[in-house]
Image (cartoon, rainbow, N blue to C red; front, side, top):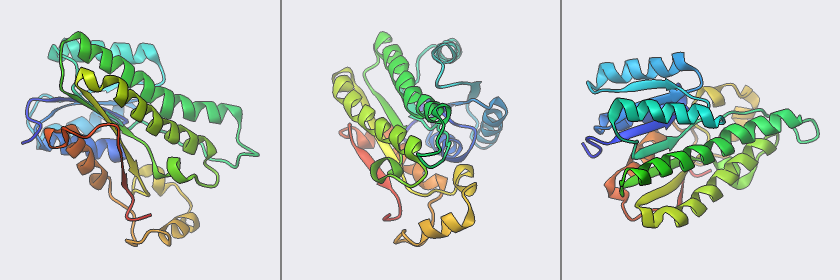
Length: 248
């Protein structure tokens, strides 16, 4: 088990890629802290993970866009485990889709606050905690999106936020490499998550026609890449982005 004894902190853990990431990292031996704005969903994730993998996993309520909420969550982790997490996975993200001519300022701000500012705050606060505890082997994985690279009609806020996540990851990796903290991003394509399932069928059909492999990805397929980046098999990889898109 390649992550035995490691402590993993996953945001957006209540569903989709975040939930699958909790399961895959627990399978590989990590202790899991599942954090989500919806505590009930985070509890469900941990109940399932704990039933399958008998370790000390916990769930937390967390608003990644709120600095005080993150401070409180990290305080609980330190109290529970006596150390900060050394695997951090930023899966928390939202959509507020609309055409740019109709997109409200509030919906633009909310997506940037969760997807980009939330990633920044988690990276900053977790990195500081890791350094303060004298740990020099940590991996932070941020969820970008292929939409952040190519754009998509009706998603100007989402595309901007995910493009920002990728550049934030690259820049922070340069600053933190000498602290023993690696940062990488994963850029999923169209994955069968609750977020994607809410997309109208005619839009899904359009997307599917552009995927050479002819199908959407599964959350577990993203989680396996995250697990690779979390462990020592990727020890010389930092500042990169891995596309997981079926060839899109």
